[in-house]
Picture 1 (cartoon, helix red, strand yellow):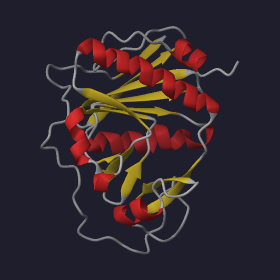
Picture 2 (cartoon, helix red, strand yellow; picture 1 turned 90 degrees about the horizontal axis):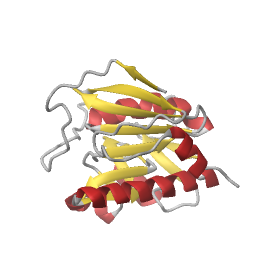
Picture 3 (cartoon, rainbow, N blue to C red; picture 1 turned 45 degrees about the vertical axis):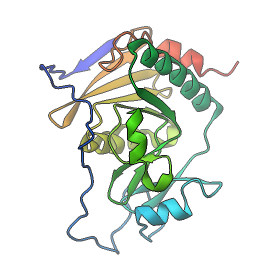
Picture 4 (cartoon, helix red, strand yellow; picture 1 turned 30 degrees about the vertical axis):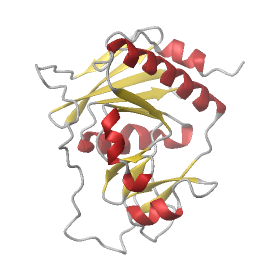
Length: 229
C-alpha cells in the first residue's frame, strides 16, 4: 500500500541538477568549540573536508562520514545491505540503458552535502560529466545527483529519515529513496520548492519514481533480494 503525504505535483517542479549548481558557501563564522551534532558524536575535534579526505576517507579500516566537521562512525556493511545495493544498482543500470541517458549509477561513492560535511549513501545517480566535479580525484561528488538511495540500518534510522532528508533537500537532490528493511517499506521523496514530499510504499505496491517511470519494483521484491537464504 502506498501512503502519500502532501504530494503536490506542479508542472516543471522536477528539476534535474545543472552544471551551474553551486551548493557550498563557507559560513561567516564557525565555532571550533561547537558540540557534535546528535548523529555524529565521535570526536570533539572538528575536521575540514580536506582533512577528512586525507585522513579518514577510504584510508582506514573503519568507515566514517563527516557531519558538521565531526567524524561519524558507520557500521560495517551487512550482507543484507550488500545484496540490496547490488540488486538496486543492477535494476537502475537497466533503467538508465532503457532511457538511453548519459547517466551513471554509483555504488559506494561519497557525496558532499555542505561545508565540512560528507555522506556515503548506498547509491547515487549522476550525469557522466559530473565526474569532473569529484573532489581531489576521489569518488566524492560535490554537485547534486539526480537520485540518492539510502538503505536504513537499525542504528541509523533517525539519521536516514531526518538528518539526511534535510541535507539532501538543501543540496537540491530531486529524488531520494529510503529503502527500509527495518519497517519493510520504501519511501520515495520528491523535491518541490526546496522541501520533500514523501510517499510510503509497503508490501507489493509498485513504487513510483519520477526519474525512472518504467522501473517496476516493490518493497517485497526488494526485501526478497536482500534475504539471506
